[in-house]
Image 1 (cartoon, rainbow, N blue to C red):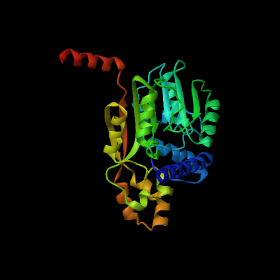
Image 2 (cartoon, rainbow, N blue to C red):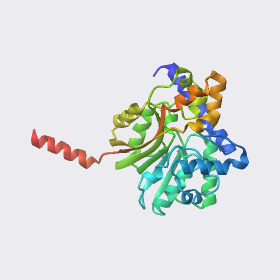
Image 3 (cartoon, one colour):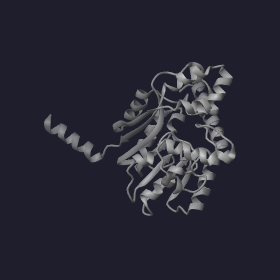
Image 4 (cartoon, one colour):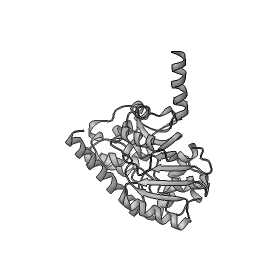
Length: 297
């Protein structure tokens, strides 16, 4: 990797960290519309309901855990079982971690990883308030996951991989920490066509989960390249253009780049929210395939 690209990656990470630190302090979303403080709870619940969370989900977590972040509900897809160990990449204030904790029970464990100290402080406070003894939060980056090899049963992530500059490395790290037979369940934003250069180079658009998004096929190829099998898009929905019209990121793009609302709406049609799965193959299955190959040679 060149020094220029390294500097670009560090610039992006710093901007994302600062953006989400502000989100943690203010309780408003970087990826969704910002409103006055008195309406933030209602807004977060409205957004969460629109992307797949139920009233029961939102009522089951500590107040302040749901910031209205995300673009789907990966916990609903993961079919979590009691006793499993779950890792949440980009855990924010802990919303998905707390939902997962209820699924895996006291014998299970949930680990949240986030690179923003302010988010971790908020998540840990929420965990104490909710009495979650089977949840812990760790400071770390998705490209360098602070977890041991073959240590977790399920990895979930919600609209965070698109923020990572080196997605191939992120998926390799995810593969590393999963146990053989483990599964990855992601909600994320991907592109159906390339974005205009001005938006691709916008820091505001990156923080807003837009310019960091990969082409859909490239995203899936990165998962396959990391070693995942049965990589599938389980659901795909258009990016909500009505949110784009009111989003703080969109407003910044309109202001700084003199982009029209019509162009922005066209950009929004290039973005889709996907729910994706990938499975880490069992070693015994690989060994069996090798033995079969030898036997038939």
